[in-house]
Every structure is written in C-alpha cells, then in structure tokens.
Image (cartoon, rainbow, N blue to C red):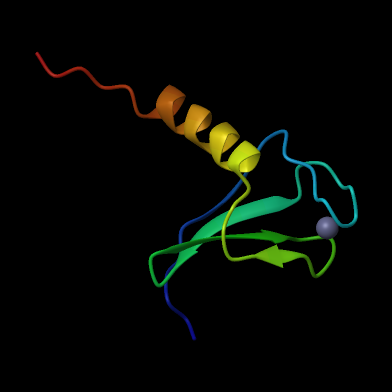
Length: 68
Ligand SMILES: [Zn+2]
C-alpha cells in the first residue's frame, strides 16, 4: 500500500500508553481520523477530544485566510 497520506504530528500531545511527548501522529484512513504513536504500538481509530482540540487549534493558526 503506497497511498499518499497526510500525516502530521500533534504538538503537545502525549501518548497515553508510553507517555512519550510529541510522538502522536494524526492521519486519515478511509476518511476516518486515526492517531498513532511512533514510539510504541499505540493506535486509536478516533482521536481523543483533547487531541482533536489541539489539532484543530493548529489548523486554525495555519489555515486563516481572509479573501477580500
Ligand atoms: Zn506510545
């Protein structure tokens, strides 16, 4: 499987399993939001509300465009 996927790390997110910081990766698979830890085998098919909140905040910072 070599599908192009958008993956990004969630700044400030801590892995609930190995407790590592900034190792949580967010990506979409079949339109389902998934998170995955790069340090251990932790994976969730849906991001925790807290994680989603952090991700959304980052998106807002990047994606603010006001067309005239
Ligand atoms: Zn982990």
